[in-house]
Amino acid sequence: MSTDTQAAPPAATPQEGPVRVQRKLPRYAPFGLFAGGVAVGAALSALTGFSVISTVVYGVVLGTVAVYAASRAVEGRRKATDRLVTSLVTTAFGIAMVPLVSLVWTVLDNGLARFDGQFFSNSMYRVVGEGGGAYHAVLGTLIITALATAISVPIGLMAAIYLVEYGTGRLKKAITFFVDVMTGIPSIVAGLFAFALFTLLFGNDFRAGVMGAVALSVLMIPVVVRSCEEVLKLVPNELREASYALGVPKWRTVMKVVLPTAVAGLGTGITLAVARVVGETAPLLITVGLITGTNLNPFDGRMATLPVFAYYQLTQPGVNEQAFLDRAWTAALLLIILVMALNVVARLISRFFAPTTGR
Image 1 (tube, rainbow, N blue to C red):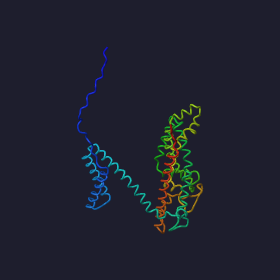
Image 2: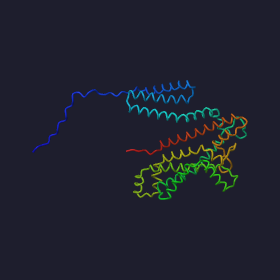
Image 3: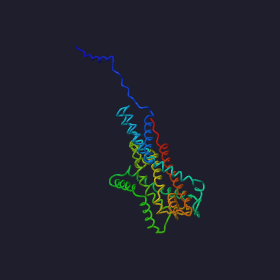
Image 4: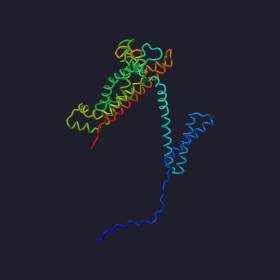
């Protein structure tokens, strides 16, 4: 009987030839080349009448060309193309950051002048010049936003639960369609809706904070529905099936399994929805208006809010125009701080309340 023998591997050649070493630019060379291009762009801009815009345009173009050419000569075509795309993306990011940085810097520069204790402890009652504050507007914003949240969260959350857990057929498609439509409606339409609703119910002279809360809830509900729906869809179906296998009814599965699992995402979505409406101005201009005193009852009389306060301080200055402008800038700064704080809270909720996973 013959046996198969395995062929021996070919003998290695004694000399494979020179090993090719890939050349690479120094670590900070691309940054230096780009900075050099910006410097040359500034010089060209100075020759034709210096301006920041022309300096940026010349600098970006020359810096990108310099990085690409140096990388092409040293590192080759593929690496040069990679550096070219990196330069373009970085430049686009820098251009996108310019309006944000400019806005924050301008608001800080103009708003810190009245960011003091008097601004947070006094109202505008009987104030016609310097002094006064936005105490009444801060309280009005907090009350109306809290009331809008109390209206929107139960409705939006239950609608999202229906769409994910119970909805089928045409009704589900219709609800999804109308939620998408409501997400894109202008804020002024929400204000007109609330104004028309309360005018029909209580007459043309009725003004109250609850009108503003209803207007804000029209804007807030679709955001809550959409965010909560996406979060609930992320809950694994295995958890639901395990609960059903133990004989747990569907409503209890939703309450005890689905919602606790998604609590971090739900909290984050609701917080971002609040941040979405806290700075709205148009609905509150129509429904709530403005008063110079403090009203803490959202069901009786006009209430002041920070967006409307800033609007009137800017558009209707009194005898001391600069004092009104300073209060408007400070109110805008406070609104930015509120929105940033809500976004930070949303991130903290997502981080600390997310379900832990382990083996």
